[in-house]
Amino acid sequence: MTHPFLDLAPLSAARFASIEDRVARLLSTEQDVVIMQGEALLPLEGAIRAAAGPGTTALNVVTGPYGQTFGDWLRDCGATVVDLAVPFHTAVTAAQVRQAFAEHPEIDFVSLVHAEAATGNTNPVAEIGAAVREQGALFYLDAVASVAAEPVLPDAWGVDLCVIGAQKAMGGPAGVSAVSVSERAWARMAANPRAPRRSYLSLLDWKERWVDGGRTALPHAPAQLEMLALEACVERIETAGLDTVTARHRCAAAATRAGALALGGGLEPYVHAAAEAAPVATTLRAPAGVTASELVADALAADPALPLAAGGGALAKEMIRVNHYGADATRASVEACLAALGGALARKGASVDVGAARLAAAEAWR
Image 1 (cartoon, rainbow, N blue to C red):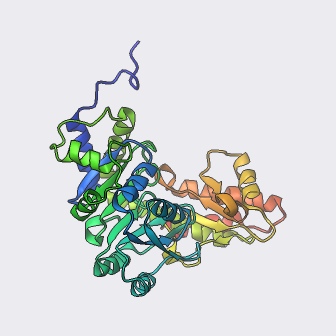
Image 2: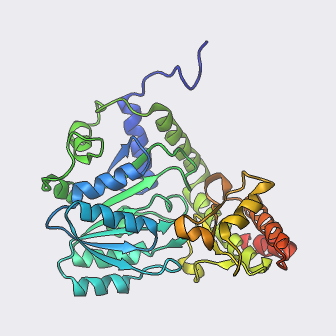
Image 3: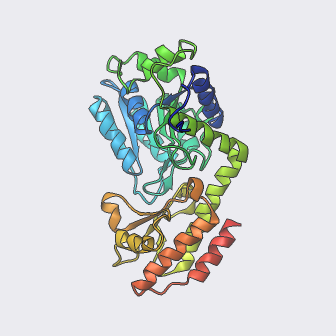
């Protein structure tokens, strides 16, 4: 018996290249786009290890846990790292980045997370990109959570290495990702004797065996199901319109924030300023005396499919995440999450108004 998921014809090089081209159009980039055969940590780590090494002085912006990870990778590569850390309830500013450049004029590499889904903040990449261009540094951006939830424009912002993943706002598969690479970044990699070669992490292998060869022969068998799923999710975004998809995420974030404030019970936005809150997911601070992970577990008891989660690690005590991305960037999903959180708070004795929360969410959505 044939099976539609198992008995597939091999994915051709032409089909693979066409999917890369569609991803490039999604990013409005003329740079090379390489689709990597793994979750986004693959190109995130591969790009750092390819472009940074001894002699690199990196400004590593830390607005959440991924920024911390990038700093670890950079140090492991032998780079000198200047961490610019800000509280997780806020965003970094271009002025802070420029101040770091003034204090460390030797900086030649900048790593930044666009939107931190884990903490709910988003950083002003366009303004920071202008500062990085003035410095002449190579600009590395993690746009895994932000792509399709808000604009991601590597060329306009001067981003040299822009990594995206399909599993959040794009509503696609987790097992495949992509990175756009500028000519400056390719040159930096080629000059780095420590850049991974003959390795699954190697971007240079993809350049030499795939990009420079005219994209006619794949270096190895692609992750077929994931590639087809990526193609399907990009097609869905193209059909709906990228502006429509990003607007839906903005509405979901605004509705969640407004609804949480109207709900009461001591629940409040984790990111203080609405302008610094990411459209991909909204983080909330649990009321005093309430453990976030316990509250979320109670809220999920009736409907485990709701896109609710507690914060990771130490944040599990205080942070609640409403992951309104992809298929969950809907008014119904937001209202269901608010109602579930309201019920859990009420069972703990808090005074809540689920009706007011629904009304505020609906008004904010409009």
